[in-house]
Image (cartoon, rainbow, N blue to C red; front, top):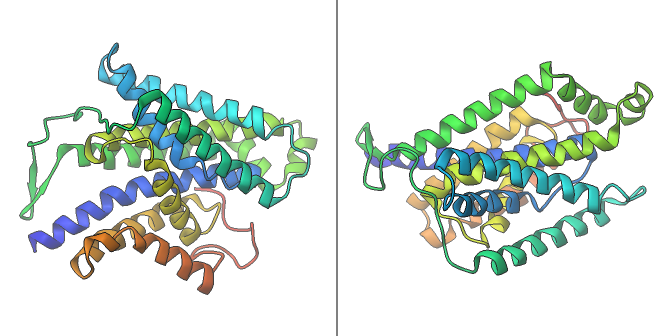
Length: 295
């Protein structure tokens, strides 16, 4: 029983990170129609920048500074590489985001080298643990789950009640009508990149004490987050949370029946299966682009 609980808690923890990455995919896709395969690099940058800032500032300031810095980087990427495009195809967008992912990864290698880094535990130490039904849980796991929960609730409130959030939803629903109503679509696109990048950076900070931070980690997170986004239905934020947890649980529980070396293949298997059986996702509609875009 304790082993089962350990698998579940591990799956929920990593699944929460996949859900945040998937929601980042959805935020940009819903507003711009772009599938941003550099989303995983925002997570990596969040952890790396926070580690660097920690040398000068206390941990809370370092985390906040990393989120703001990466959010600004996301906004600058949109302005530099996407704003000037006129009616680009989906293939062009995908190639650009994959290229950006490679460039960011190589830049991180030159700035921070290939060493593995991590932030200190927010509460307690590496050996501190909480026992739940016989399973040992790190206090950092609670930080991950709490941060993800607050982020999801905050995004729900932002998109439903904030004026800027409503404007982003309007651009996602009908860009032409939003433009006629005086909404600056270009600004909304930039804001979506900044919001998605900041969200990814926050996830990178809270997961850093558990999983460590490495310049190559972004690619794997992007693929697993994309699998969760596809599983839930592109553009459906609520479903992305459920799908991310499902991918994390499937990956964690697979260790009980498969060699650990095959753990990373689970997300790929789920992605391929969904694309073949239900390409619009479990919670999306059959027509591409009509999945729910609200929390």
